[in-house]
Image (cartoon, rainbow, N blue to C red; front, side):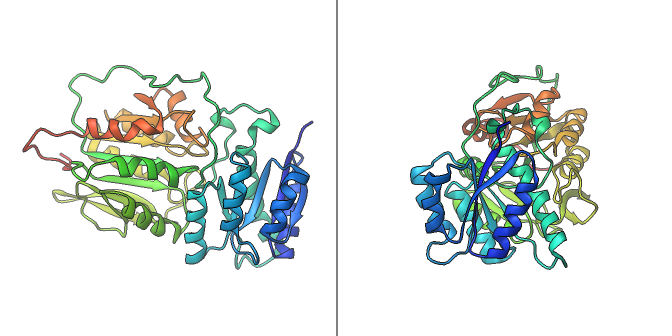
Length: 379
């Protein structure tokens, strides 16, 4: 049976050993080499021919970003998973790595109390991502049912399209008397930062509705992601703090480790945060946001499910549709992992299945307002 061949690049010998041991425990993975810095790692690429590389962000001689740039020149399609510290610097460098073509990232366990717990954290975070990115090596189907429901944010070369749901497939005609859109709710995970960097900058500053957004990411990462997207977009993009009154043309990003929901305050709709239990192993999770959107906006809600591992957003999409709202999803060909959008499409909840490049145009079309008409107010 063929195994996934992994190369582990990290300057810390303890981390190299820990990651190698965790990966080697899995019967589908073998560690074919390790390297103490990026320069050695690049040399070993042609020697061991890995299927996936784990790459430390901070290393001497040639750091993770420099190594990634060089690696992408010779191996544009090789999955690379960055290892990052849960610090502001680590978050910033990880987001930069994703923009340079890293496939995913895992944060190094800190203050977990024991080696066994650290190994468990790495096992839970890393192995599902390795297998999701290397499905072709194992010969497994790209069915979303195989995707683990772990938080993730990543970009990698997209998998080939399948015939499960054709491009622009429809779940049926719009219901009679459908309402105008007054809120866009977006759920995204694996591949999210780069997917959002495609969609949001294409939206005009005149967008007549607010956007609420869940991207599976830890604290600090979500704030820096919002700042990065704000700099790239005509829209205003902020990390939600709770209590903001929704305004057209503003994107509210759920902060790491908090669920984002909407609440009614008199005639206004405001953001609210909570730390209720994770859903689908995620906090923030898409389902709580979609539920609250369906309860407040009903038929005037438009949900968008983009690339991601797992099935977060499926139950929330059911709530949106049950309330008369609409759902569109990203297609498989343009998704990094067709887990979240795939589950929604397969359940027949997606009114349209679109390539990433077409989603912004579709959002602007659906949110167009006649001159002088009100927007962004739930009735």
